[in-house]
Length: 424
Ligand SMILES: Nc1ncnc2c1ncn2[C@@H]1O[C@H](COP(=O)(O)OP(=O)(O)O)[C@@H](O)[C@H]1O
Ligand SMILES: [Mg+2]
Image 1 (cartoon, rainbow, N blue to C red):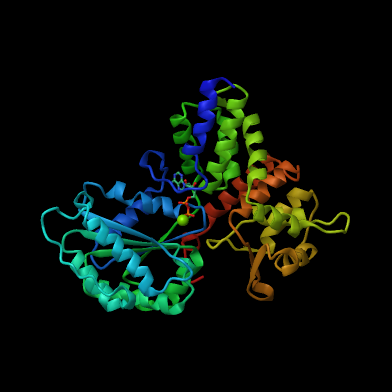
Image 2 (image 1 turned 30 degrees about the vertical axis):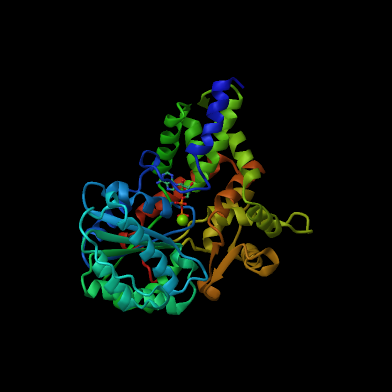
């Protein structure tokens, strides 16, 4: 490979970063609706927010962009704390308050330089919602505070969750100039809201859905522009299809696709490069995901259809929490196998796939007639689909046809059905 292409090939890994959230506004794509909602919450006293969505969908990246989007609008200090399963209420707030104290010593970060900032230094080992409220009240006289707790779903201790809800309530009741932003996967939000109705009004819920095709295209185009590379339209559409709205996957695919193009001596990406990129990505996928897939679809019985059923699950129409019904599997399964199926032909497969013997690759909820399933890990879905294409169980065009049919179906549904209902 010529040295300039070799250098570019190396650089792809710093532009497309499946392992790391975005830190740079120029590489950040889309999400304007969510950004607006966060800024609204920050600018309203007594208002806090919870940002929730699947893993890899871009929550941390979005929260990294808050300062860039707020710049020049407001004097503020942001603290960011990653939650850990072992964290107590005090340890969480000790980290957050220390972070704020540290930025206080760096005047350019929001606190005006010469003015003395009241020092409250509460005893970190015994923090309570009330002492936290008082500390934040003192600290927020100089600048608005934004206190982020990322990966809040890791906190399983209900006492910690209750104390956090009480804190939100106390801050809100006292109109403190501080905004708490909790970030987590969807289910934890339901729990938080269900148990603590009193904070529902003070907490803006910001769902982080999968990305639209347009947003995925923007990721691809922004990254390629930075690399001074180009892409053929059909190749771009393949990348969009394979990414399934998950920016993490878009980054993973883009690295290997760019490298495949550069290795062939080109700075323009064509479909064949995407195919090579897809195959490399499948190899590079987390070992745990590959093992889970293999365990789920193996069977000594010749002619079994576990692979086909699992692929149909990945292509089935889902609700807002990614659950699908048994009936929703019928259409994709018939397409994949080119045979007519009825629910009773494959209901047992769905049940098996949700049992420990097949790694519980599907999660099952509800009883008999109201059974619903979902794929246990969101990163699995694009994996299953790409494996399906690689193993020639389905073609890209068939997936596109199914997707268009599903989109039409969504458009025809009454609006109320499409809105997110957190209680579901
Ligand atoms: N708006 C975005 N524009 C470009 N890339 C993004 C965007 N959001 C997320 N990504 C990329 O997607 C991957 C997952 O993002 P991350 O913020 O870590 O997700 P989450 O916190 O929801 O798990 C990372 O590779 C990140 O670079
Ligand atoms: Mg994250």
